[in-house]
Length: 261
Image (tube, rainbow, N blue to C red; front, side, top):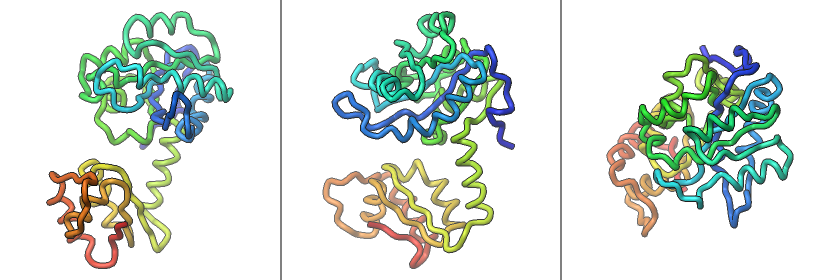
């Protein structure tokens, strides 16, 4: 059974909230803040219930390097400009800067920790990085639906060691939705899948093949399917290591159920 945020007592506790703020940014300006607004209900609930909130997120692919091109500063500036909530950027996601920011915490203000992926340990789910990330916090909340399939420190590792943990409102909503479509979907049931890598979604695809009437595959991973079917794809991205997997998916889907661009 899913543990949800409303079951926790947050008052006066240091709360680490994992969100997905990996939004499109051009020339330092956020172009689409949908992922930010989706997290607002959880953020405001924590603040309204007295939690000392620190938000963890990633942006882009800095590959474990402190590359300020991938700083979350534009996200913080956008949040404050829009008046979504009072946000303050902390120039790190672990260590003394985080601890000191929590000690100087101002009520109703959310701390936004600097890009988690500035550390290699995030994507590697390194135990030492996970411990450092979790150290100042008493409560862990995950509301980062878009990255919850990843075995990263801030998603997988910290959830394994946090004494108090729960899902945020976005995760709760999506789980309820998926529960319905996997148990008793309206018919005809069509699933649309995108993304770059087939290997990231093989479990989802196979599960949906047992449930869905039709599956539409788009995004960059469609090129792997198209290549396997004999189409020319030019210099488009192809996941060659997944070609055998794709052959199995096509065979399992049978005729008339799988649609490609």
